[in-house]
Image 1 (cartoon, one colour):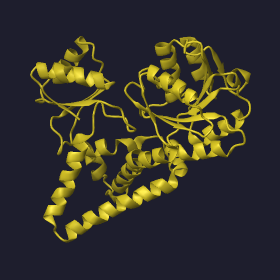
Image 2: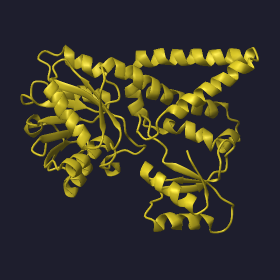
Image 3: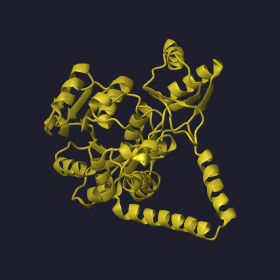
Image 4: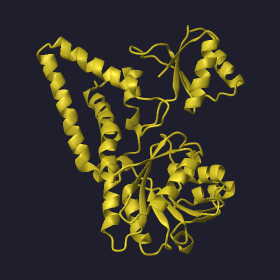
Length: 365
């Protein structure tokens, strides 16, 4: 694994985190990066995560054992076209895009297609760029692999071992099955979150009372609406028909609920919420999913001078970094009033036990 030559096209959050993880966890010494942002290339070179950086494809990239394409879907397709017929025999091409069907269909339509394995690491943050990347981004995250028709079992096993090496969990899925799953658990939720935000925006009064009061739970359930619009335009257009079909199913669910209201059907309304609660509570919380979890705690405290400093000191003295801390002014459906944002799930677990041991009332989101 150490002797393999790796190229990463697109040195943003995902590509940058891959470079860091491959270097730190697998000690891969030959990593070439391609990116239009020379500042990112310069930083990666300076920090030692790559040993070559270019703004365009060249022979160094073509001579790689594995090439990761970490760009938006449309650009990924352009790079596949440029790489086709130029990479060395046995080279594995893979990507990190959020849809797989369109890319795999394109690969399979090519004459003498390359060994291509569609990839989708189910991890990310609201940040972007190499400066925001970190080596443990993929820890305990599912990493989908969708092989094309010209992919050997040996190539699939080789990429799978690399994925395990950076801390992720490889899962083999057919490209069409992948797109149905992601449409339901990621793509449509992003549409719905954005629709809810736009509902408030267009329903609000001139004095913006809704916007002022739209905090707490509303901001939690619509957090993903702050995602990159260009990225989501690419995703929806690439997976449009499946997203449309899933939205139609969602509309059927909403229309059924409207009938419950019209008929004052108390049992159906109760069962609607009870069924959702039971299913949500059964979803495991020890794995990363397509939507980045909220690494936050709520602390129920009395408003008194120094209370924020008191809690910050406890966490700081125990090596727990706080990304953000603020008072929740709208908390009709949440306990406590102090919301603490932490860098990762392990920090949440440590802070929870620590503050609980100090006598505070603490709640995980």
